[in-house]
Length: 355
Ligand SMILES: Nc1ncnc2c1ncn2[C@@H]1O[C@H](COP(=O)(O)OP(=O)(O)OP(=O)(O)O)[C@@H](O)[C@H]1O
Image 1 (cartoon, rainbow, N blue to C red):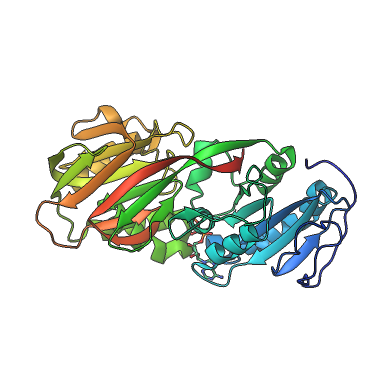
Image 2: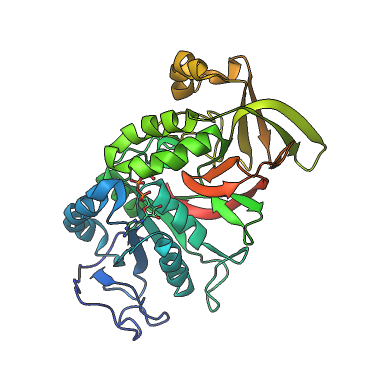
């Protein structure tokens, strides 16, 4: 699909008129057309760029990448770029791109940007679709990992190397991946692609996000801040719609569609975003010194045999406090999502992704 024709540069804003080379679909009302393929079948790819990702590095790397992007994809694709103006904007851009029949939406940034793009694939609890489009042709997801942690990419062994990422898109190979869903008192469901987590790690992540300017060091600052005032809590858990079970003195629960979080910690080492399951890892009765003694095992994914660590594969899991305090943090893909109770479940093969 992605290997033909010539580069056309159009640096002005695209009009709402139908694209000259894509008569069946309207031009995308996005920030800018970077390059225009010359065939009527040119794929339309929207790059959603967070210019502030990784402390501004994403925006700079994106600018440097453009000449390569044009030369590698420009012959075959109409390429659009759209810069996010702030939190949640990537969701709106993605929804608009899907409704306007984009062939792919590519998140350019970190896990937060990817998370928002994934959430943009859904609206009011259903996948967004282009009304007039053939049911068999959907919008694919792509990723140019350029964030601080870029943890989702690690599951596939992808580096923060934008040239490699462009190559994956150029190859055009795709795989269907699962998406996690979170329901709670938040009205609409929320989606995650990487890891959702509860209690200490989620609190640490909440604080880490305030210190992204320090790069990966933000996770250490977040962890130290998370420990302040932390107490392990008795939680009730229901797996796959079964019976409620009490897990005493829970330190953290991590629910992985993929393997890594917190800037490279292999927390759910058996998770695979293509297997229709979530891997749940429960840490109980951990003290601060346990993290120091066992940190290397958390990073290399050998912690499942450690005392007070439980793991299971689930399709759904509900988590509540035994005594409700409303203060147990919940995080999804590194984004703060409020507090318990919550239900998590898997949507198998929900999105097609360049791999
Ligand atoms: N223009 C913008 N200005 C400020 N914040 C933005 C802007 N666009 C998006 N954001 C927010 O920035 C957050 C973090 O971005 P992103 O995930 O790309 O980088 P990161 O946090 O450095 O990387 P990682 O999540 O992999 O650690 C996103 O969740 C998004 O809400």
